Image 1 (cartoon, one colour):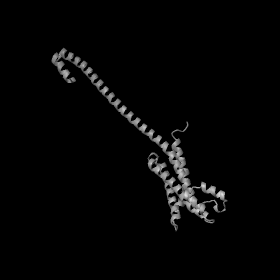
Image 2 (cartoon, helix red, strand yellow; image 1 turned 180 degrees about the horizontal axis):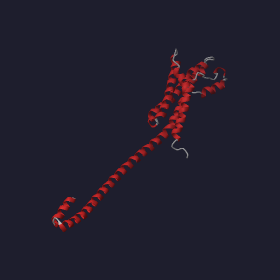
Image 3 (tube, one colour; image 1 turned 135 degrees about the horizontal axis):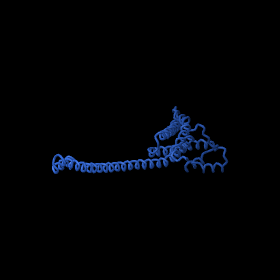
Image 4 (cartoon, one colour; image 1 turned 60 degrees about the vertical axis):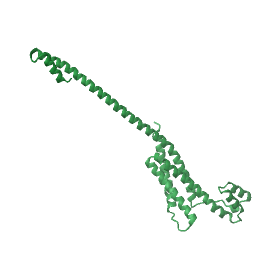
Amino acid sequence: MTSAEILNWLVHVFGSGGAGAICAYFWFKLFATKWMDGKFAERLEACKHRQQRELEQLRLQINTLFDRATKLHQREFQVLPDAWALLLDAFRETLNFVSSLQTYPDLETMKPMQFAEFVEACTLAAWEKEELKSQPAGSKQKYYQEHIFWHDCNAASNAANECHTFLQKNGIFIEKTVKQRFQKIDQLIREAIVTRRAVQQYGGPIDWNKVEAFNKEGAPLLDELEVLVQSCLWTHDSPS
């Protein structure tokens, strides 16, 4: 029943005018006040309930975002050290492979026992070792250099491929700027290896720009990346 309906009922009961009107007004004010208080209490309770529900939803969203961020940071902390280690291995293998200052032991002047120990410890395949032993004097050095080249090439290529594959699979967990630095060095490594292999395999006027770019830009970029990786790993857990 609304306040107007209550007033009409009171006027009908007590009459219109005089003491009846005064009495009706009194009762109307009493009932209207209680009715308004009741309505206010209902709306206040509804408002509190709505606010409580909104707070619960907000708390759930914040907890979800925090949990997601925590998991991403944990994954990043797992990925970054492995990515750095693989990149460093690939860089060092490539640096050794493409270097123009290759040094080789002088097999022609080695004593028989020294030569035998060297052949046994080198990275040539078993069949290559047997062929190397059977080479006549004056041919051992050339045979070794020609064959060890491809083992060095495979070592660099395998390290580069392992690093590249890891970055493709896990790069999504690495911050964008840091990921781009990884990819830049990774590209320099793979292009240098391809160029050096092509020179050995095909000869002729091969463009050495890729190897030169690796030799010139690789080390500085690696130093910059090391600082970024350390920053990512230590920023959130730095001592107070």
